[in-house]
Amino acid sequence: MHKLAGIPASNGIAIGPVFIYQPEAPVVEQRSIADPAAEVARLDTVIAAAATDLQALKAKTEAAVGAEEAQIFEVHRMFLEDPAFTGVIKEAIETSQINAEAAVSQTASALVEQFEALDDEYFRQRAADIKDIGQRLLRLLTGAGGSSLAGLARPAVILAHDLTPSDTATVDRHMVLAFCTAIGGATSHTAILSRSLGIPAVVGLGQEVLQLAVTDQLIVDGGAGEVWVNPDQDAINAYEQRRQEQLQGQAEVLSHAHEPATTSDGRPVEVVANIGSLADARQAIEMGAEGVGLLRTEFLFMQRDTLPGEEEQYQALRAIADVFQKRPLVVRTLDIGGDKPLPYLDMPEEQNPFLGRRAIRLTLAEPELFQVQLRASLRAGHERNIKIMFPMIGSVSELRRCRAHFEQARAALAAEKIPQAESPEVGIMVEIPSTAILADALAPLVDFFSIGTNDLAQYTLAADRTNPLVAPLADPLHPAVLRLIRQVIEAGHAHGKWVGMCGELAGNPLAVPVLVGLGLDEFSMTASAIPIAKALIRRLSIPQAQQIAVECLKLTDLEEVEQFLSKPF
Ligand code: PEP
Ligand code: MG
Image (cartoon, rainbow, N blue to C red; front, side):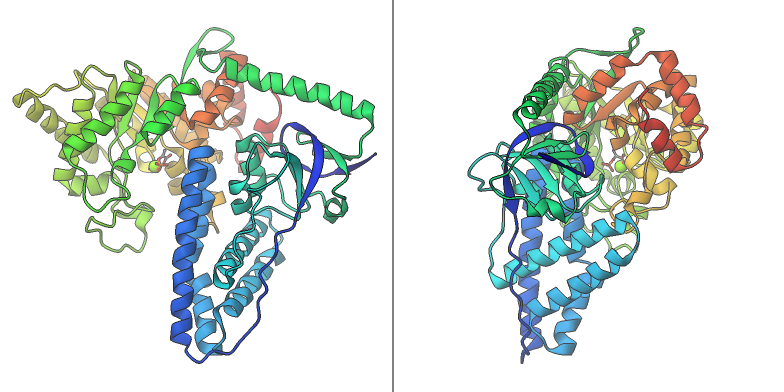
């Protein structure tokens, strides 16, 4: 028996046989072509097909794992629209008069080489992304078909050079005992997806891991980053016992998912879910959500050709409200624009869509659309606990205008004698630095704040959250963002208003102690994150969490914050 050491990527122990995954790279030959325009058209067809496949993978991953993990497929799809990638491929076809396969292969290889040469984990990840997209295009162009892990005959530990997001998304999780890869880091896609799927993983094991034989047996310890090859019976027994203990630990966390999250000294903390469909609503209940802190209503408007009417919206919202009964359901008004255009709405092309007419700016410019949505939401809230939330509020006057629309919808329903929510709370998302800074002026005009750290981080740190080249800069653990969060919570509390958070940070186990310490009242997150967040909260006392927050808020650099919060408390 011998040991291979790698990087811990996803906790858990697996014991079992090996499956060596070596996807066949499509064979590419360069040919001269006579009609570059026809070749570009052939490439365009394939790009469109790849975009459709990526959309399907995104939807599948979103349903099985979560929106955040699915985002990588959106990033891949965006690469397909990036002139620095597909534009260069087309140029190669036109100027060198070569076939699309050769142009894709050469362009992707050149980009991969450039990214790999940079001494930075982040850019190495982008290299892996480009490789994945290049292979996807080549498989479609050559008709090589998909190489996949979907058809494993028996449960096994998957050994691979690296795994692409497409590989990990298509696996049958019951057949995969663990992932072991030669390359990769703790934040690689394999690592992130394995964690969300609950599959143990060790990455960065070196090429040696690919020399193992199909007859070998392995023990994989994802938490320690260790792989034992052909262990003796004593080792198998010891690890099997630990595996059982870990499974019990997970089952234990899940078994308490439906209990309240009360700190060890007795303060209850509200843990609710972010949802975007009726299916999400049901999953949220299963995972122990005490309500909904963010219903993204965009789903009512997507994948269709016309605006949904009041009745249709009412029925959909009512179905979701029925799932939660008297539990709180925060309905956010439409947050379209930015990276979420609506093809059937006349939206002008914008240079910087995230700084453009998105979210509340767009709804305020479309009063009819706003009224229809407010009326549908208020109607769905009749005898239910609906709250209304406006996204992307940037100023006091903008909030006043929203409140006027809200009152108009209420008055109209009352005049028409249509049943509606009795006195729904009205709140805003804090997503723009100006709003965080002016929180004390906004607090008297709202019932609650919900901090949207996804956008607050991108606007505070001037880093587009969807641009793979800079998205990691938009990290909500950055001290500047943490200080804004503190300011918002303090301003809300000073005016007797509750403060929640529905950005991804709320469900990040690293952040939970500091947010409890800052006094956050409501944590809203992807349903799958709820059981662990609740367990973490139960282990903390308020003075201990406050101490963590005080220490953490003294730090001035992101890396210091990450290191500080990674220590066990
Ligand atoms: C946010 O910005 O943090 C948020 C929750 O809104 P969305 O992710 O929908 O933009
Ligand atoms: Mg947002």
